[in-house]
Each structure stands twice: as C-alpha cells, then as structure tokens.
Length: 507
Image (cartoon, rainbow, N blue to C red; front, top):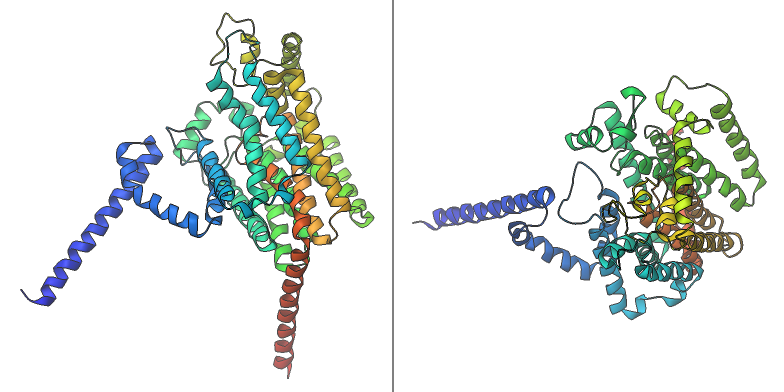
C-alpha cells in the first residue's frame, strides 16, 4: 500500500472518530436537557467538563459570565432542564467563584466587602437560619424544607453581594457587565416580540394551556400575557421595567457617545417590552424608578422635565382612554382601577392571612407550604392561599417579626446606597451608573410588593448584585475617571479625523 493511500485511510478513520465523538457529545447534551442527569450523559460530557476546569483557572471571569448567562436563561421554557432544582446551577457557580476568591486571599478585598449592605444581609441571613427551629405548624423541624426555602430567601442574596463585589473590580469589567446585561435584556425583548408576531414554541404553548392558563389567558382568550424567556409574565414585566429604568439613567448620564446611545436604546426597548406582559405593576415600577432618580440627581434640569412627563403619563393612564385600542395598554390602565376584581381578591386573602398570623408571630416556617402541611393541620388554609406578593410570602413564612426585619434591612441597604450616591461619588457619569443600579433596585422592590418576583431568576442576582456595586464604585472612582478620559480622547480623535475627511472632500 502506498504512503498516500495509507494517509488517506488514516485521515478518514480519524475524521470518523471525531465525528462519532461529536455526535455522542451532542446526544449527551440533548439527553441532559430533556431527561436530566444520566450515566450516559455524564460520561459523554466529561470532555467539556475538562475544558471548563481549564478555563476556570486560566480565566476566572469565565465563570462569572457563565453565571450571568445561566441566571438569565435558566427558566426559558424552550430549554427545560429536568432532574435538578432550578437554583442549583446558579449556586454551584456562585460558590465556585467564592471558593476561588478564598483560595487567592488577596482577591477577598475586605475593604470593599465590609459595609452596611453586607451587615444587613447577614442579619437577615441569621434570622432565616434561626427559622429552622420554627415549629409553628406543629410538624417538627423540617431541615430539608427549611434549607430549600432559606437558600432562596436569604443565602442567594449574600452570594450575589459577594460575587459582584469581588469580581467587578474595575471600569472595563463594569462596562463589559453593563453591555452583557443589555444584550441579554434585548434578547428577552426580541423573544417577546417573536412570541407576539411569530408564535409560541411547543413548550411555551404547553405552559399557557396548563398551569399558566388562569393568569396568562384573560378576557376570554382575547388577551394573552406574554412572558418571553422568564418564568411568567409578572416576572418578565417587572424585570423589563426595572431594567429600563437602569439603562435610561445609564444613557442619560454617560459622556461616552457610543455608550450613551446603546444604553438609551436598550432602555427604550425594555420599556416597550414590558407592555406585552400585561403586568400592571410594571408601569408603577417604571414610574417609581424614574422618580427615585429625580431625588438622587440633585438637578432641577432633570427633575422638572421628568416630573412633567411622569405626571402627564399618569394623567393619560388614570383619567383618559387614550390607547385603549391596544389590549396591553388597557391592561396597564386597569391598575389604576380601585374596583379591580383581582386587587379586591388580594385584599380578601390578606385579611384571612392576618387572622392566622396573629397567632404566629414567627410565621408558618420557611419552606412550609401546601406540599408538606397536611389537610388536618390548623394552618393548612394559610399554606394554600396564594401570596401574590414577595412581601406577603415572607410575611406568611416568617411572621410579623420576619417581615419587619426584612423591611428594616432592605431600608438600610437602599438608603446606604443613596447616601453613597449623594455624598461619596464625585464623577457625574459614575454617579449616574450608581443611580441606575439604585433606582432599578427601588423598582424591583415595588414589583416584589405587588408580585412574587423579588427572589425569582434572574432578578435577585441582577438587582441585589447591582446594588452591591454602588457600595464598591467609590473604590475605583480614580480608575473610572482615567478610563473615561481615555475614551473621550479616542472619541474626540475620531471626530477630528471625520471632520478632516469632510474638509478634504470639499477641496
């Protein structure tokens, strides 16, 4: 056999092996997505695990960006991952990032992490830890149920704070983060447009025909509340409103034109995207976020026009019928109706809850719900009433004591961030970024008051993590000023070259 023929056979064999390995890997990924973990999926996925480990130690921020993506897409119904709890991928990546920071002690940055926000989160976390001893329901200590609830209600807040504080440490990473967040939000807006004009996927339609039918198909089927890649329409609408607030403020205050235009465009896209969700609360979230900025801006030039626009928008929605031809606008307008049946039902439900919780100052217990409170239990009714609000959910499970602690710690975090914006950050553009995070946090808190969205994906990481950055920004303000000067000089040079070309063409 000739050397050429032998080489051809060898290349074909090696090519066949590569193709076979690729097909096996693709099959493993498909099986992981559809049926969860299996021996076959785990074995065939080992090569990508090795690659991920190498990337982890060579480029640590790779895990952070992976966390951002997974956090945003984890509840996309078109790509369900069964067999593991939704929060597990997030927690694994967060704990891995924290472990790597601990291994490299110099990365801990204690001067950035020890602040009022961390203190408030630790107080809330300590209270939720003590809740493991809560036996109000008379069912004994339920450690598994308690931990499942506590990690979502408290521990993920601490993880978000530490991860953002430890890994977003300079202007370049900060801007990169804002662009990644913007692109993810634009994709979510695109997907809701796709649902609206092209149609739903099979899994999305199954959700609407199943457990989402009573809340998402309304007015006898004339209106469908869309949810994009999120868990539900309320979660999507409130997230888009808070994100719109953040990026509109980033855009207004940025001095770098390419950033300004991109952020403003993102804000406008997100503001549009909240309407197909039919989430009435999102309108108020947008308004609250913008009016919070009026206070933080310390500028009459901003306060006066924003106030006029806000009052005009409120008047149009509350006292006119402008835009009633659009189902989404009609839905938003119903939020101003005091006789709305949905709002009245919530009031009735909360009156019932109040009677039960009068005898349960520590609440029903974290993790205690309809699935583990038996039918003959005194608190079965309390466990089955839909909370319809994150604040009400916390009130049910931790009582008047728990909701009081949560409100106090939240106020400490929020007003501490406001103080930093007003008195510690000198750069106008950096103050604008801090204000965007702070106002978005105010928006999502209002969303949590009206809907159970505060601890949902991707909100917790985005908005609690964002607030933690407000506390970290003063530590790299000098770097920011230098970075901004460099970008502005590049911008000025491009403008100068452009003018020279125009002049040359005239000649």
